[in-house]
Length: 189
Image 1 (cartoon, rainbow, N blue to C red):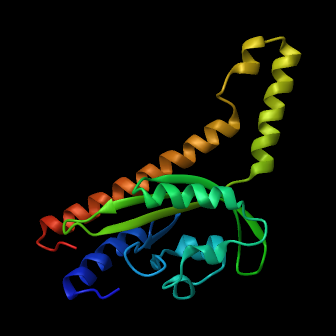
Image 2: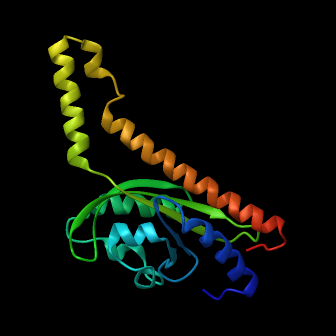
């Protein structure tokens, strides 16, 4: 990225706020070759084992591996290619090689100068726990004879996914707010 000092100041203001957020967050530049990560917060480091310096300048696909669902990756790419937000759960790999399910939400945001950045939030998702909760809910419904319990879609897994989505939406809205505040202060990215 060839950033002017104004752009760099703007990015610094936004990333200063993102550094204290309680979820893993990255900013990427889709206009640059291979959509490199511009910023990764400390929670990204804790989740993946990669230091921010190791992630910045690279495409986030470095977290993918043999077990990553290519159909989900294609769905993610198609949505982002259309300029739309996307949510997927990918099998990713930490620096030490250990796998984790990453509930990934990526949202394009437009800055005051029309530049698009991608805000990504990553959260580890325990698929086994979600399936166990779903299975336990089904068993309880059967034991209680609660037919409606079998069709009800408010189980622990669905609530967990909705919680991840709300966090992702909060990340996107906060980044947009920080960008707008910086623009009001005379610094437009």
